[in-house]
Length: 195
Image 1: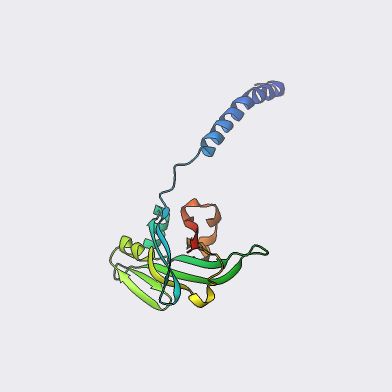
Image 2 (image 1 turned 45 degrees about the horizontal axis):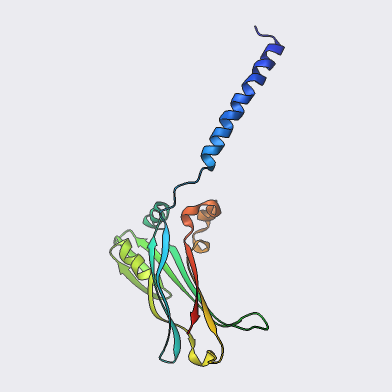
């Protein structure tokens, strides 16, 4: 039977090995993970003056992760939000906000019909496949930002545009641990001058 001193000696000798194993596992877990499959790219972002209004056209390329797709296929609705704010440059103070518009899309899978339902406010349309529904979310043309009467001809203006997956509108139980999951992060921001 080993004495107390011998047991303590073995524990102290084994300690560096345990620390080395712990450090090795920490290095492995801190190594950069492969890039997530979820991507949003803005292919086109145009600001136009047409029919007495300042309008925005955008085309984005969306790719969702497996986690988001699995949630969609289980019937969890996912919300996408596009936001555009028109600012007027001012040298003497903060830039003035001229107009702000927000558009929200709700995408949900309908298991009884095996269709994808895309809603914008009270309007809804169904699609046969997820890529078709995502293509409709990722493309907008003629979105009115402001009347041209709000745009001062003597000043310079710019538009801040953002497109994101809105996790704040997900069901409550899904919010647990959501802030640490990169699978749910999908956003892009751009600033464009108004000519």
